Image 1: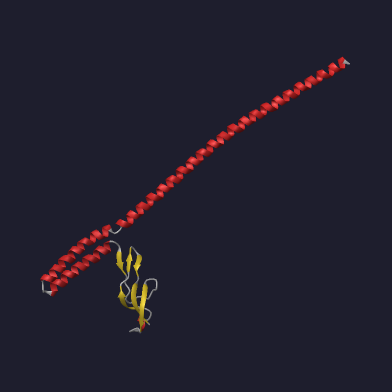
Image 2 (image 1 turned 90 degrees about the horizontal axis):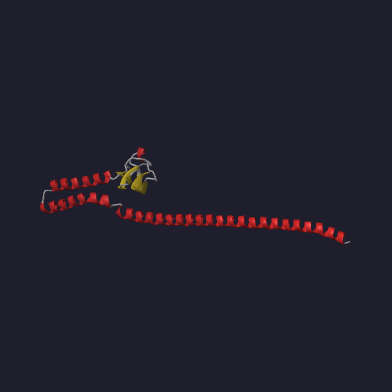
Length: 187
């Protein structure tokens, strides 16, 4: 029986060794797998940190852009009329000279000529900046361009539905309406 017992112990020992070897292999694979998972986890964490850093930088860059853009917009609004006002100073100087001339002269013809020169200079400055007066008299009434103040009986049949008189001129600035014409329409 000892031999049988010894024989049993022999294969049992071989099985024990194989089982232990399998356990060691499983443990080695598990350790390697854990190590790979940890290195992969570290890699993902570092990628996440990089992505967070890029995101924060982009957000900060965008906030700076918005601040800079708002500042430029405020500056533009504050100085938008500067060039026009500078050009108008010449007209204002002419008005001052015309006023002095009116006070010193009794000749109405000279005063009239001087004032007309100032008015023409004023119109030319505004036209050079893109201002254009609307032509409304004897044109079809257009509610997109005209504001009807009143309607009167048309003096002739061809003036029905057309602008008969202009109370206040309408203006375009660079082909956009900045003021509608106030008109009288024939009915």
